[in-house]
Length: 410
Image 1 (tube, rainbow, N blue to C red):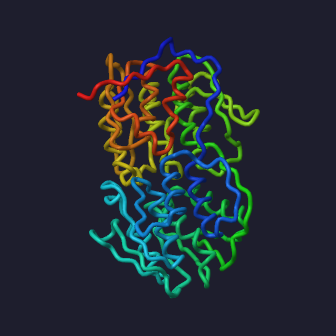
Image 2 (image 1 turned 135 degrees about the horizontal axis):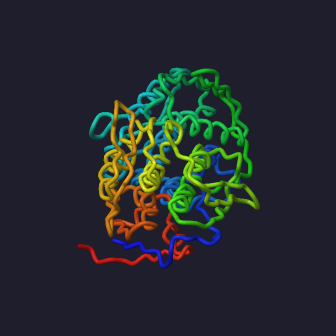
Image 3 (image 1 turned 30 degrees about the horizontal axis):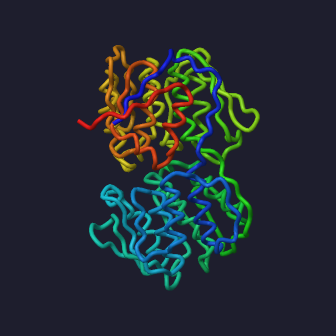
C-alpha cells in the first residue's frame, strides 16, 4: 500500500512530464513487424508490461504463449499464431482466463483456423493448430464487444491467400482503435477500404519501414485530471501529436469542459487551468479507457455528468463499472445507472480525511483515483499495478511534489 500526499498546496508550477509510449501503437507495430519477419526499424516502444510481454513472446517463440494479464497480447497473438500456422497454447492469469475470446475464435474458425478450448468454452486457455487452408474470405464480427478482435483479424488479413472482408455487425465500439490499426497498417504499405460496415483487405505484403511510437494519450489523461482538480498551475506533456492515431486524444475536448486549456507546442501539449464550463454528457463508445479518469474528475469537481458507451468496461481487467461504483462511494460520490446503459456521476459533497482505494488488479483504477490527493490523503492498495501500462507513473508524480510513502500491509 502507498500513501499519497501533496507536499504543498495543489498549485503546480509548469512542470514537464515525460509520458510513456503508447501501448496500443506499440503492440500493433510489434505484430506487424513479426508479420514482416522483423525487417522494420521500430523506435520508442512502450515500457509497459503488456508490451514487454509481447516482445518477449515474439522473440523467444515458446510453445506456450503465457500473456499474463495482457488482453491485447492475448488477442493479437491468437490471430498471429493461427495465420502463421503455428501450434501454440494461449494462456494467462486467472483473470485473463475469465475474459471472453469466443468472438475472435469464431472468426478465425470461420476462415479455416483450427482452434479448440482447453477448459471453458469461449475463454482461454486455447490450443491453436494453425490455419492449414483458408476456407472463406468473409467473416462477420460483432462490433460492440471488443475492437481488439477486429484489429487482430485485420492485421493478419494481408497474409491470407484470399484476403479478407470483415462485416461489422451492430453498433461499433472503439471505432478509433480500429482506425488506428488500419492507419498503422497503411504506414507499412497495406491498402484497404472501409465502406459503411465492411472493411476489405486484399492479399498483399507488408512493406518494411521505420516507425516511431507516439506518447500515450490514455497515460496523459491522468495529468489532465490532476490539473483539473488542482487549485491552479500548468503542466507540459511531452511527445503528443495534435493529429494522433489514438482515440484517447479525445481527452483534450473532454477536459476543455472541465477546466483545462490545451495548446500544442514544441513537441508536446501545454495544459493550463481555466474556468470549468461543465461537462453535461459524454459518449465513451470510442474511448472507453478514459471513463474512469473522467468519472473521478467529475465527482471531485461537482459535475453531475451523464455517461454512455460504457458497455465494454465490464470485460476489462476488472468489471470497471462495479469497481468505479465501489470506490467512488468511499468519498461520497456515485456512478448511478439511471436507465439501461446510461450512467450519471453524482458528485461528492463531503470529502473524508483519508480515502483508501482498492485497485482490483486494474492499472487504471490506481491512476484514475490519484487526483483525489488534491482534496484529501489517498492510500492506493496495490500501487505496482501501474506497471501494466505506465511503470514510471509514481516517479512522475514525485516531479510535482507528491510524496509516495509505502505502508505496511494490514
